[in-house]
Length: 116
Image 1: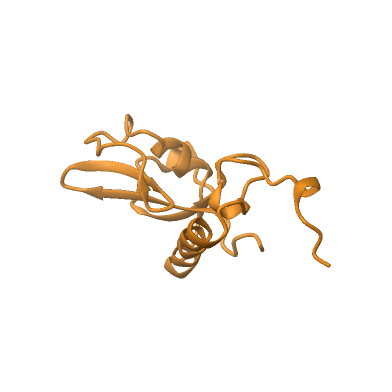
Image 2: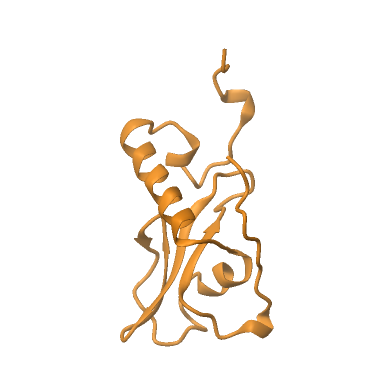
C-alpha cells in the first residue's frame, strides 16, 4: 500500500488541535489506520478505525491520545480515511489474519505467504 499523499505533521505550536481525519500507524511497521479527532459539545476524543479510544474530554490537553495523533498523525482526505476504514472492516470480516485486521501488530514479511 502506498504512503499517504498528503504529509503534514503538526508542531506543538499548532495547539490547540482541530477536528479532522488522519492516517496513523499504531506500531512501527504496521499498516496505516484511519484515525480521527472528534469534537462536539461533550468534548474531544480520538477514534481509531471507527472506534472511540476514550470518553469525550472537555479539555483537549487531557483527552486520551489526542496529543499524539495531532502531532504524529498524517492529514488525509475524507476519501483516504473512508478507504482505510473500509479496508479495516473488510479485513476483519474476510481476512482476520491479514495485517489490516491486526493494526497493533507489525507486518513480518518472513511470515507472509509467497505471492506466486
